[in-house]
Length: 417
Image 1 (cartoon, rainbow, N blue to C red):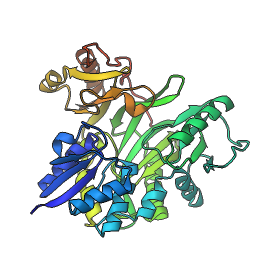
Image 2: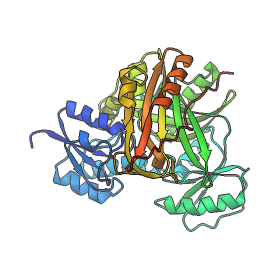
Image 3: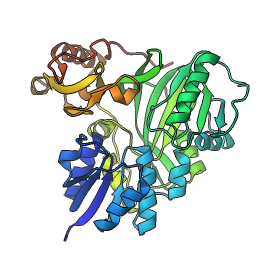
Image 4: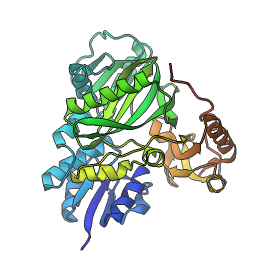
């Protein structure tokens, strides 16, 4: 094989664009994903069905195909595997396997933040065999597997009985059996997309997250993001300072840094951090509204090529609308092509392909697709979203409508104080 070979871990929707960018750089692309038909399968030159969490399996594939690059742009746990394989084969990678493993452990993450005066909520960290102590935390609390992907297994408990049930569930979901329990932080949640260069985190864009917590299992579902987030100058400066402190505390450089922040008036608390690009289709809204290509920057980060961070001020409002379905076997969506032709939807990205199960037990299980809508004003944006929800529909494999039309962005909350 004359071409260079790049292995991409995880067949998620944003990795479609990542694979195309690698092809444009001259790579033969191999996608590793345990699913039969993940969204990014058709983009890759070759799909191999293995778990991205299986270090040894990915190592065998990388060695067999003489890989030049092993990477993941948007999946925390896959980053660990990528760094493990790259280190073992002497391939370039953005940070060590040890750091990749540690920083995705929510207990380690919280401890480093506390030790470096980075504002975050009070917590306890529990080892697999540790007895659950009397908790000196104020309810409600968030119960989290220490090493789960995204919001998987994260539940809000309003009292001890719920906390105990969610703690038991979190231990089973966690790969290492470790659990974090932390005080719930009120306020508005934003996602911060930055890039660390020469020890400083440059904030490229901030989006506001719209979420609900639903059902007996208290599943967190983010149904929309709005960018740019309407935050005050004081809050922006506090976030900027925290992002750089985070980068220095964890020893990060020349890498994307994704930070989730809770804002209450002019106070902030850091919820989660990840040295990667954001998930979903944030890569597109960042590129469209600022000119910065965070996926290209991620590739350069893995290749250890210094990234020049150039970006502009956002000129539009962008909403990424996450479409949820009721539990079923997914069939298809109708209406998206007409909406794009009429300039209502900018782009449409599938999280599920035909035949995949839609579930309600975790946030990612219920996501069908994401629709990106653009407006010059908030009012124009909102009008387009409402029109979209009237015209679009999703169906199961038997032709029954399954789209959650109750879960979409109806209004905006002003974060400016």
